[in-house]
Amino acid sequence: MQKETLFHLKSPYRDDLRIQGYRFGKGEKAACIVGALRGNEVQQLYVCSQIIKTLTELERRGHIVRDKEILVIPSVNSASLNIGSRFWALDKTDINRMFPGYSLGETTQRIAAGLFENIKGYSYGIQFPSFYMQGDFIPHVRMMDTGYQNPSLANLFGLPYVVIRSPKPYDTTTLNYNWQIWETSAFSVYTSATDRIDEASAKQAVASVMRFLSRMGIIKYHGHSGYIASVIYEKDLMPVKTKEAGIFRRLKHEGDDVRFGEIVAEIIDPYEGYVKMQIISPTDGVIFFAHNEPLVMENTVVFKIIKKMYN
Image 1: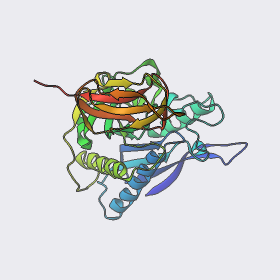
Image 2: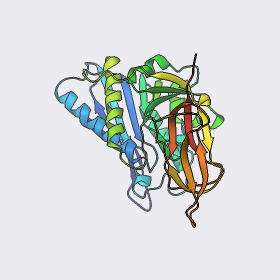
Image 3: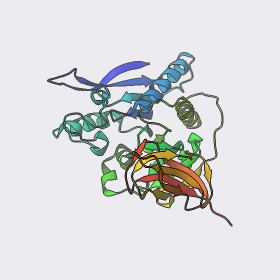
Image 4: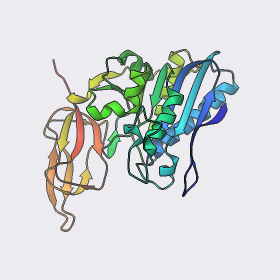
């Protein structure tokens, strides 16, 4: 393993920002793995630390394939991690909305440019992002529908689902989208948590990356074969919204089967304690996403359901 500083940004107030990279093997730029781009992505940071730990042991045993290089970047935004801020602390901008970056632009544009200069050109790019809505997901691989995506490759992670997303205009400045445009096969791997550590889904994420790297001939690794993934489109996920605000009592969790008409959550009056609203499943299916905050506002998406198809 070789540890190096990929990008250095001086700071007038706190310690300088340094993006650290960990290289395994030498030769062809085979795979790049990026962890926390945002300051609350503790799970993503943790997953990358476990990947570095695993790859260190594999390299010690000579199990990195000859002439293959893997680069792992556990954190891009350590300054915001230090203070628990999701976005760049000074102006609240999102680094994952700044790619491919601009070296003479605003701070987060320069950070994105410095990072992207180091990670473009890899055959495969794996990112551990977090979603803009607060909640828990079934672990899955997500890809942008850019015309360059390859769902059959995403199946090799062995996670339960592969989700294809039709990009909105703001998606064109994300890392996943720009990696694909610059001819890297890019995959976003989502675990079940963001600002807390979920050991079970972290282990599943590490195993999925090792499985993918092994199947692509980059490492020698023997593990569980994983799932045969179902490919779904994000637009086909059925959202379930609240009609009331209050305390959110979740009765169903990500991965649970639900039936049409089943009660999946309740909204409790925060002062008087009575049930203001019962949230009902609008379909038979599997809960893909579940809100996990104790409070909820009116008209919030609290579940997304994979509809069951019957012949």
